[in-house]
Length: 161
Image (cartoon, rainbow, N blue to C red; front, top):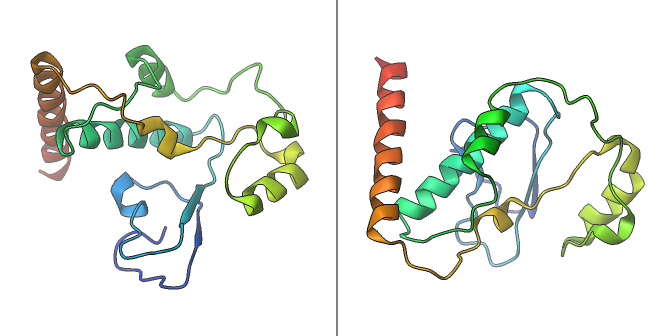
């Protein structure tokens, strides 16, 4: 992936085909005045799929702890744990839902998705995972988020040492 250090001043669309361990690296659009669309191509039922859900979890933690916001939960703890085991789904859909269900502000994405419906299982708008539910974190939620952050840091230290 492009990640840190790559300066794409003219890019409005970036396609990531390799999962990123640190999700914040792929979400940078500093100083841009036009919308920047970041697409992630993920092969369903693979380690990439697991990495994607892990990244969503990490971004949610960051928003809770650093930004002091309380994003709506899109996945339960059980959902995240089940995504950690990479097993192909027996009843995996074979293509994208009906065209009217593709409702994004990026016309290019809609046209490509409609043309390639037979090859696409799902399209998820990652930014919608982190919509603030307009409630401040209570003390218990803050403590829990802080504990999760400490656990993540400890895991990172174990990998580095």
